[in-house]
Image (cartoon, rainbow, N blue to C red):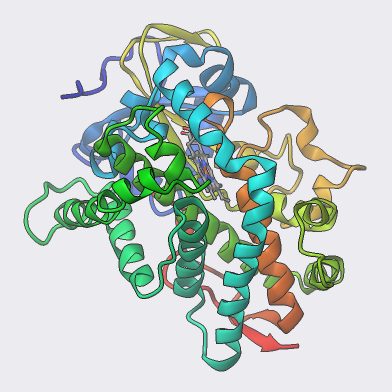
Length: 437
Ligand code: HEM
């Protein structure tokens, strides 16, 4: 049983908000404006209250965030920080580990993300994307759901090493239930979000567990096989927790990145044309390679700019394991911490006119992110930096090469309503349509 975080924060500025609901009404639907107000009042380090008046210390801006994720990372725990989430996703998952237990596991899965593996994955991604886009030529797309299922299918075929066809929608629903359960404060009574999350977890666990023996006997070179290797010595629970965690970390985030980049491109047709031209080289016979994708520099600016504006993980947690000083403030042991890439990405001191979609800010002449190594951090930083960063970038490029070959995207409404937790996503649908080229 993990102890509840410390609520006494002497010497730290902050706000306790309203009884029971804390600052929640101001943090929802988009926490950014409220965090910006608190930042101008208190500076880079202050506390605010989530539901049930649970305090969390916000550590903002690249310098202070670097202390949490990199220079003083040993004082901050993922295991404790993610205690609420790991109950639902599986406590042994890589993201929820600290210290050597994390380092060893990270070393074990890294080969599945090495450049030679990415080269193999490109063809699998391209196959999946073409299949989806072929379907969109015949049927009216339900873009958000279809993108989710596409990224899940690709993750399953690459990192899990299984073909999922009919089960894709079912697995997606179960993982969405698990992720949603993490944002609910109600107890797991029948019918509640938490109850559905736990039931879904049992379903997904059984899905992976039944495949472990076969994978041990006939290993592939995917993440699942790395985790099943007897040398690593993980038991079935740990393997399952990690598969659930990595699958959940991979496809919802990538679906969010694709959905929001499609929306951003729909709002700036000029960039659509530029990407269509640049990515056309991938459509030549033999052209779909990791190297060719890496040479598509304008695509990489659009990818970065879209992730700056719409980081799939806009906020993420840690908890102190000892007293630690950040920017002159002493934060006691066992304090909940919130790190906020979305805040850094909207700092006008780093990115002038931060709300404007302007991919050129990542061009070599401008490189606005160059001011600090954590000025752009949608994939996190430090020991837990996203393992799938390059995987995601390649998948996105393959997707847009095929999409823009066939279609233009047009907005049907300028405004899109977003949810920010657990993963940034349009609230219901993406307000745009595909128009055949
Ligand atoms: C645009 C897409 C993605 C974004 C924005 C993203 C973002 C992140 C972030 C911010 C973290 C660190 C969280 C923390 O420090 O608390 C993370 C960790 C992780 N991500 Fe991603 N991710 C993406 C795609 C992927 C993909 C495609 C995979 C796998 C194929 C993946 C696998 C992982 C894993 C395994 C971790 C845990 C690493 C560790 O604890 O050592 N991610 N991701």
